[in-house]
Image (tube, rainbow, N blue to C red; front, side):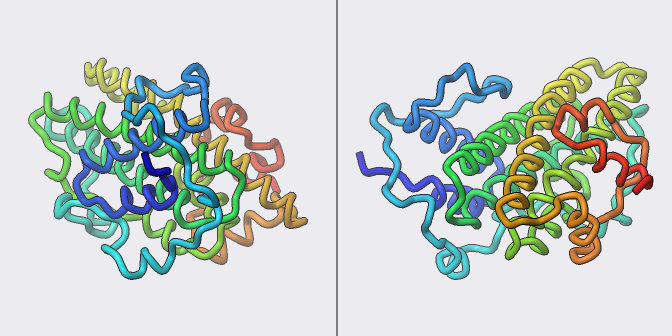
Length: 294
């Protein structure tokens, strides 16, 4: 079998517009890389990852160093996504209450859309930034696979509520920040996983409380899995942000507010899930900044 280039395949998966095929591509790609590098399955903490890879898969020589930007510029628009959901400004997405069937479906649809976009964010980190250590790509391929699992769980539960992914309005805030940081890997690590995605660490327990009161035990169970995995995803963002800052002689704490201002990232507001953020690798100084105590 011909060797595979994980970063080229990540770009192909990112371009895929069909949600199911994209999710499967993310799962298969991580399975292939895991097999090629002999990563023990016990090290994979996601929920029933799945994915298929040929028994004799190998990685192409020099796969970490190829610049795939010319191929991306000549290919399909990024990211590949279906015609629906219709994307509107965040302010135009109706508020969602879980205490009616329609409202609960809309709330879970919003989370499902976040997980679909999170597959794209992880795949984009893999193909876009060459020359990083092997572990960087393994980390983000793992994240893409885990997000694919989350998306599938939520979409299946939505179906029990009479809703399909695409039925509700959605916004594009996550990908907007991805585009703003396309040329700066330090900003990408700072502002996507450890800023926008870290919001989920704070919001999920509050949403779970509402869903519990609404009687949706399955949704709460799914969010337990997502929260567990997202602590790991944010930790990956933190690890690589600090790795890059250290390698470039940058002060990670002092730089972060500058990146927030430069790329117009939102200033996060409390309440914060301090325990989850500490578990994800935030320092006390970083938490003090979030709390406004800097």
